[in-house]
Length: 346
Image (cartoon, rainbow, N blue to C red):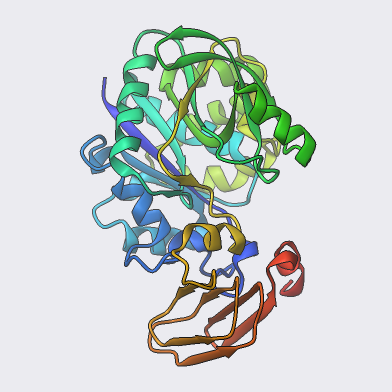
């Protein structure tokens, strides 16, 4: 059974403005200053497990050239272009139908394009174990992140009985909780964060979508004859927007009876906000996280500062703020107000 990687890269990263814009969202940016963009880091961490010929990206039509430029060598037929955003269930369905047509025996891992993994070797071990697990039958596996704090910004997964070492039945998905509920989850010890990463065979996910999302499945069946032909994009443009707008969690994961969870710890973050970047970036003695090689920070504490290398910036007397400059747009705001950022540039 061959192994395939699906990278979901259609988001617009509105909470990371001004660095992330609708024209160049965060998955195509080197947010951490490591020299590789988020989608490149996602691709890199599957090295040695997935061959580049089996890498697929689902993205917006406007990002086709960016994907091809950043992931050199990817098969152009494997860059799937959504004409509009319909959430993750239609995204997963489209790529799964296409993979099944090309490789009926395929095993698939689905990963968001903009997450951060600090411990790559540990991550690879979990992925290899996951592939072994789903090879044993019709199984859907999700990776649950061992929580390090009562986080209210993530969804949670409740695990049930252990089916084999390190693998559990998936009992329930839980929406983002309030702080009291999050503390209760941590105390129970049977809850993990929902990473948004899934593993299954092509046959398994197609069958489950047929069972639990028959409307989406019917649309994919209409597209199927034209997949890998010159007519594919035209047909997708016509039919994909008619799909129900629904997440794979709601469409399948909360209904299926073959879902399992693998609790994991590999230095994960969904890197969804400036605050999460502040948490993950090394700090100076005053709790400032600085990305940029020409920044001087004086009498300031708790700030997240991200400016281009070579941009001379001096900051004095600032507390718990975001400072970001990108393409001649400057943002300075309180970290506590970061959820409002997407309002300010609409």
